[in-house]
Image 1 (cartoon, rainbow, N blue to C red):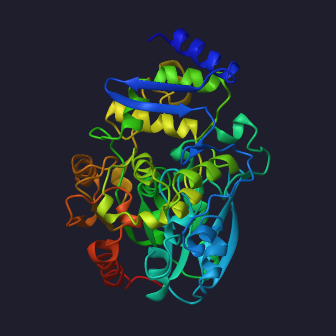
Image 2: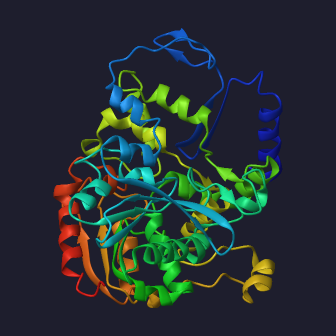
Length: 434
């Protein structure tokens, strides 16, 4: 398919949306997009988006409420000491940092993954979420939000309506967001080091921080990476693989229609997802498949009752450029900076190809936890990462062949399979704190 044909077809769909009922796109035998513009139905009845019709259900009122509450309100609701903090990066982004405060205790920083937010660490509720478990075990819990997500959509100069606001990838998060967040926590608590736990992209930004600002390794007790990502050579995610194969066409189309934010978090998406994924609807199995399209499948570890909460908080926003960067990593097989094309690369980097990140700078102790059924962080790519990190103290394959990318944070048996082991590792490496 030529670029011009793809652009023309998409423009016609946009300009004539009133006469188009649906649009779909396939790559081989894989359906990548299937967007239905017709009026949604529920149990055979048409349901207008502005309808006053209420869909009665037997969903636990707490689940319905939790799907609407922000991270601070979720923590407060369940009786934990909640705090909001604002962090300004050195390039002007204003980030929200959430805290389950235990003053005087060892701080631990939790950094979420792609299209996620701080809510991921608490939204499953007490006894079922890693954020609460860490607090109950005596830690001072801080939860980051990187630029562009639900809680970090402010800049000293630009609004989210400016293209410049979205001109970032996970490179800037590692170079600016995470260092600024770490400094804020250490200055607030008066300690010299903290624990770091990153899920998926939360590990990517740590490797980048180490590469670009290696002095921050002295501020970390132990880095624990859940579903660690760096190399995407063996990635099995349909979305990432699509971006790798169609990177030039997708880039042109998205720039043409002015979409700088990928999967924006807004009221329409939240409402529509909650309708589809309500526990009582017959479409909950389909909803599960949509959620796991980019990550893999493990229905045994998914608490499907909590789907309304999950989709109420995610996707939480990312930049289009950020998604393109993932596609580039998959296409190149390397862990390197954003590829602007050989001419701009030469102007920006002084080389025709982007420079690779310096994984040898990750001097801190690292624990890697990975799953057999992880599409984004398959064992082959984790092995490549392991071979380039200089100080891995633990490499653990979760003892469940179906364990997937999201089970590390939402899995029903995550505590028994993983979290208790993590807590033990944390206690074993705390001698250098304070």
